[in-house]
Amino acid sequence: MNPSEPSGAVPASILVVEDSPPQAFILKKLLQHHGYSATVASDGAEALALIRKQPPNLILSDVNMPVMNGYEMCLALKSDASTAAIPVILLTTLSDSTSILEGLKCKADYYLTKPYESKYLLDRVQSLLVDASMAHCVETPAGLEITFEGRRHVVNADRRQMLNLLLSTYENAVQQNRELIKTQQKLNNLNQELQDQSRKLKISEKSFRAVLENSGDATLVMDAAGIIRFVNPAGERLLGRASAELLGTYLPFTASPGEAREMSLPAEGGELIHLDLRAVSTDWEGQLATLVSLRDITQRIVDEQKIKDQQSRLQEANTMLEALATLDGLTGIKNHRVFKERLEEEYHRCSRYALPISIVMLDVDHFKQFNDSFGHPAGDEVLKIVAKLLRDNSRDTDLVARYGGEEFVALLPLTQKAEAIFLAERLRFEIQSFPWEKRGITVSLGVATQVSEFTTAEDLISQADTALYSSKHNGRNKVTHHDSVRQ
Image (cartoon, rainbow, N blue to C red; front, side, top):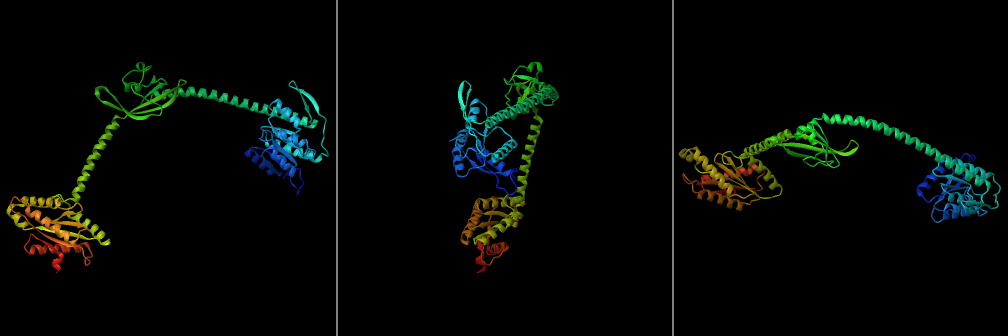
């Protein structure tokens, strides 16, 4: 609430003339917060148009604006009897003679110098509103002729306006003096801080050098030209040269600020020293320099290589173990466990999507007699050759496995009855035609293809086994499909 207004009175209206939207917004909010009604115009011309429609109680205007500046607007108002009594506060720097003369000529009521404090602004607004409410007429003094900087000027401002200008100028000088005092105090404080920092820096440099001297890592300092200016004892040992020999020379390798890499240097005996290099910018004796740290990581590299070798051997061992877990130890083809797992997967997949699936079971004919006649090593050799023939004559999508003893099995996904019988006949023929060393070898085969009556993978195995038994019962060395057995 405006303190000059009685409770319930209409708030004083103030026109803010400002071309900067942020500044206009700040002024408007400040005035509204203190109980005034505030309107904004972006330049002098727009302000005059608004004033003609609805004269405000006071005008608060910037000076430098497009279209029509604050001086021109104020002079237009003060030259019009209907608006001459409206108080005008100009926000100006009053920084040169032109500003002072323009301020006198336009007959503004008050001049508030930038930068200003909100309290001063509100005090001047309140004071001018009170003065305006007590005035009954507008003084129209005769022009006063003055000489300023060698030129003659006519000023129409009254004594009050001139006094306000002088007061504004004085306030500006006082405010600038205060700012100068504050600035001087800040400079004094900064100077003291710099002196303190300089003392600390000297202490810090001594401590820094002591830390580098005692560092276990080789540490060197290069100037902007790349010349060595400092090297610690660890650096002398690493490079194999005394500090006196190294200072004033160049490093045998490049190092740029921000660089981090691993490198190697030849050592005595032809071996390599592996190093971790880190380079950062630093200040050395008041000059820009590069701090280079070299850490010997030779043992770490050796240990890492040992770990890699061990991991490689472990991977090979795991591969062998995995193979042993899935392959038949004698024949090298898949074992019984892998076959059963794969059969369950393929059976459920084919059943779900109504796809065909077949299996072929085969048994080496008269294998016990062969073992009794030629010995188990010869029998093992027969099983190996049979396994190889099965693998070589099967498709990539088929799975061939040793089922147990002299029995083998082939899983045929996506295979109908006719194609399964054809593949089984080819296997039988290849085994019979092989040039066996001891005596001819034949096999009996049983084939089963998924039909609606089968509900599990075990049903498929059972029917293939039945068909195999039928082949052996009917003379061996033949292929039987489970359909023919059922018929």
